[in-house]
Image 1: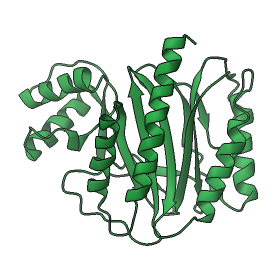
Image 2 (image 1 turned 90 degrees about the vertical axis):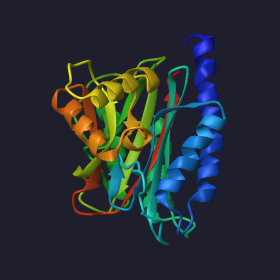
Image 3 (image 1 turned 45 degrees about the vertical axis):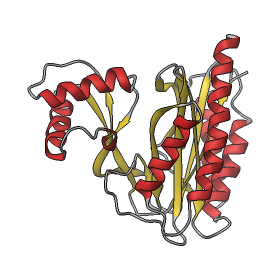
Image 4 (image 1 turned 90 degrees about the horizontal axis):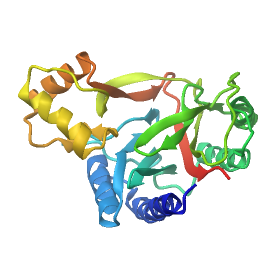
Length: 287
């Protein structure tokens, strides 16, 4: 990896360290999730980073893709398992990290297993290691502790301005023969649940992403498509980030853009049996 690229990754990681420390001070009883998202994202910008995706704040059985909408009244309660998934980029080079806290408590068994599993798995991410070998160890360790991995969620590669690149590393056993290669950047994430271990799409979509240019009817649709390409660098963006379009017109425009295939939806993902979910994630450069 070129030295300049390595320095950009290091800067993104350094910013993430400070933001995570800051975020942990905010995750207290009665904190509003919209306020939390705004404060965390603002801190990223203040420290010289850019957002690789909207901060995800997922509570209890919600596993991924919840980035609060404008006016969200959801507040944290004592005992909530709160997952913060944070993506920061510097010049397009992404650091993707996540952690879980139990509000008002020092820890939680699901959090401990997620963090311990991640530590063990990071030791396996070396050149020549095959994906199925890594995934097998994720599932084996989690189930040995009496919980389940979320089998249809995965770790993933990172590339410049690309959040989900090759390889994909599922949390559950598989037969994927792809090998880890030197120089790859991997966001390894572990999801642990006391439920059955699967997620499904649930609720409204709060995060979108540019896919391709398409002719559209509404002027608002053209504005959003331009923002998605130029301001958000084709990376995922939050619905709440678009504030200069009235809600009704925004909803119509987003629906049109999805229907014509110009935008990708990232729906909120929920554990199918309403099991609690904990998440731990780190970004590493394979050496």
